[in-house]
Image 1 (cartoon, one colour):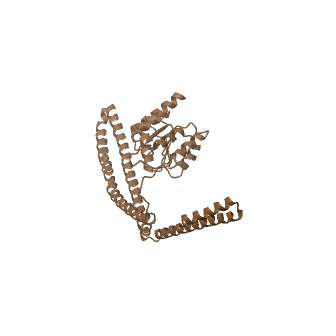
Image 2: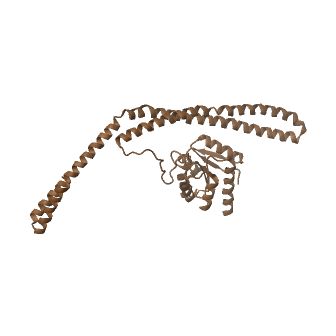
Image 3: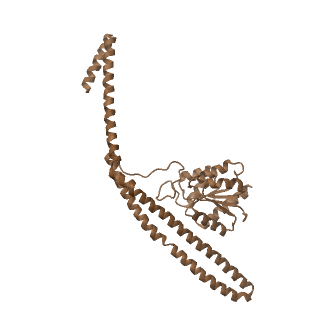
Length: 130
Length: 221
């Protein structure tokens, strides 16, 4: 994993963004940026050369699942790895996220260890298919 | 018009048809149909009146007035306070933790320097002392930031009482308007609908990250 990779954190709660930002910094990732919903995130993703997207699901404005679908439908962003970090934990929702092409799914409340494991797994898989 | 009257009309209609008296048959058929329409109209009028009375009662009900005038704005205000207070406390804690994390980084760097060069030992002792004092301050700040639990807990308990009262009033109004109303049952979210954290056990909710991981593995993610 490239420690300089550019990461976008999308969550409507500033405290959760701050927690994820701190955990990522602890894992060696300092190049993090924030958005408070899908609508704010989208123009940043379109022009920002991001390497990784961490997003919540339930947000006012554009929800995380719709942001994921928009990313997969965009030729320039289709291959961007996306990790959902969300309190939404119903079976039908996880199936929807998988169908939409999510790379990882973490349910809140979560631990630093879980975040590390999911990041490792996502980038191992990407390296294997590259 | 009762069943016997209708049977009588029907018999007359059948008799006229059997005798081939087309004019009479049309007459009896028209009578039957008129009877039916007026019956239906009467029923519609009756239902309309009942619905009107029920809704009139609901709209002018003092209990609903109290709910919309006082209880709901009060509950909303209290919950807004909870959101603000918890957010403020979380930020207060995060700020203290971020400061302390950088202090521990400084401490570790200073220890490394002292380890590499014995001459730095006294500088390290001084640094450790300063960092220790500031860490103590930071931890006290985290401790104090937890006061939100007491304050918001009281407000949330009060809000639960308000919601209970509102529910009781609404149910009594609904029962008056619609006697068949049979109390509450949990709402079912639409497929994929975002509903926030699951607050009760349910068959379709994944309670642990490893359940989510198993499901994702099944789905090939």
